[in-house]
Amino acid sequence: MSRRIAGFLRRTFGIVREHVGSDHLGNNYYKVPPQTTWTGRKVGAKRMFEAANPAHYEYVESSIPSEWDAWIRGRRKEPPSIEEMLKNQQYRDQIKQKAKEVDERDLLLQSQEYEEGLVAARSQTAVKGHASSASFGKPVISQEPTSTANTFEPGSWMPDPKK
Image 1 (cartoon, rainbow, N blue to C red):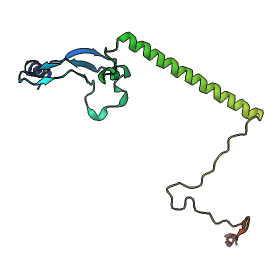
Image 2 (image 1 turned 90 degrees about the vertical axis):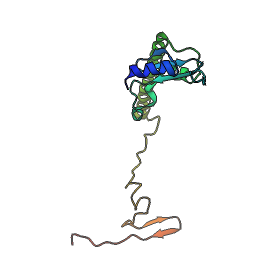
Image 3 (image 1 turned 180 degrees about the vertical axis):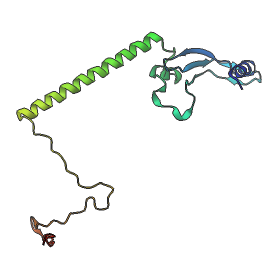
Image 4 (image 1 turned 60 degrees about the vertical axis):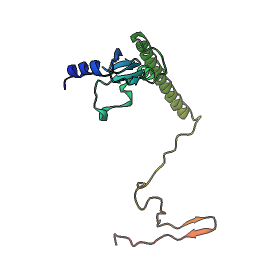
């Protein structure tokens, strides 16, 4: 059924919704005022949106801007204006830029401290094998004898393969 026919049937027999706005992603937002249908059923006020890409499996969390999400969930009374959304986006970009600058400054300071010997260099952990292997975490038999405190473990002898 085409959108035009569906819209006509919805207006005639169903719930009337009014378009409130749309966002930069192409989503449309609607408000359904409280009303009574032709069958006498009372419908309360609702807020909803029509996704630009209606396939539910392609929905991701960022497909609705946070300002519109707050309006749909009733955390704000009025829908966001374009100016407000632009202002908030500029603020987010500034925060990201400042965080990037702080990270770069921190890495520079750390490298200077390592060079000057003020801080010990980071230790590199050598991991042998993979955690999913059957031998991970099991003691490896060494060819050299090892001794720790009161325990002594002899090494394993293997013939020299070159002889």
